[in-house]
Length: 338
Length: 121
Figure 1 (cartoon, rainbow over the protein chains, first blue to last red):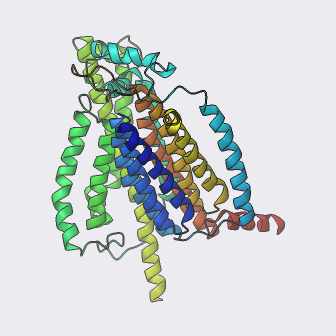
Figure 2 (figure 1 turned 45 degrees about the vertical axis):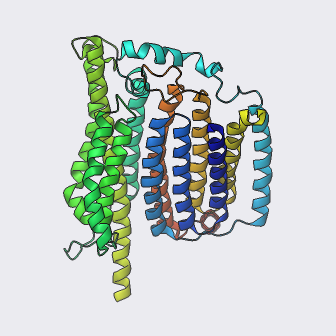
């Protein structure tokens, strides 16, 4: 039965990918990408990767689609059809690469084999020792925040850097004078009564859920990355319905930028504290009375740092893009009036 | 039944090649980014498929469960997804800037303009 669902989901993924290739309308392709993400999230659930599915559903079907749509609003909706010669050449290259890769798969261990090399080395240690060493049931969280904490620190820094990069590319521009009114062209949904009432009902539970995901990540699927994205999604939903300007009043740019840096700082300082106490960088066992207790504290703080940074960077990116869309809309209005 | 033992890996190849095809043939930059994200997801699927153990369960320890799937690929891919969206956002920001500089996001147009500028002086 599981195999059947697996085959169906993967086939649907291929069909969606082909449809993305086929359509010339970028709006349609971006929507299909959202469906593609949702399908892959269901596939991840099937493969027991619940934490991954969580992240993919929040990121891929939520925020990525939105960012691509705002980018499309700024650049145009239709693409030009690729030339015939290019298509033929591309098909040739892709077929040759595909066939070579196919021969590569013939040597791979069977799918789902419990004795394949990947299952022999680190995984047994994590599965059997982590309860004694770290003391939390969700192995993914112990590996993410403790065993491979240094890795995760690097990834948090990458996300932070990407936020700075987006700001540097399209963020800093002299502000144009507006007529002082709180109005936003990104929020044409403001007059939609059903959306307004429903989103008002939904946003508090979403925020609450994000907090649950953040702090329950030790015991169930969840953690800083997922919570951060869900938190940002709730605020972005608010911004879309009630206007980006109003959302930016509640979450001022300066504060959001400060928080993005603060998350990375929190993560790094936890590492420094253990370094200064004579342990290795990011070895949390010193933080509590017993090593296990220390691990609990370390993971809690580190995940909090990740959550803060991810939330703020997602907000920075969304606000920056929507400010661009907004400004362009106003310019367009002004030129039309002239 | 034996074909099913490698089915996931073959789908990974097909998805990867569709993504690759979009990146090399389409000239629209947003479409290229969509192709890249298909390519990226195919790698995610490869990792997660390798970590799966038939009859296993999600790696959240419990007394009632004996077999777990491999948690390590999950950790790697979980962070890769969030890093992926951050870098995609960076790519989209670049596309916005290119559009402002060249008035188009079709690779051919941008290259043509570059060529003209090179010949002019």
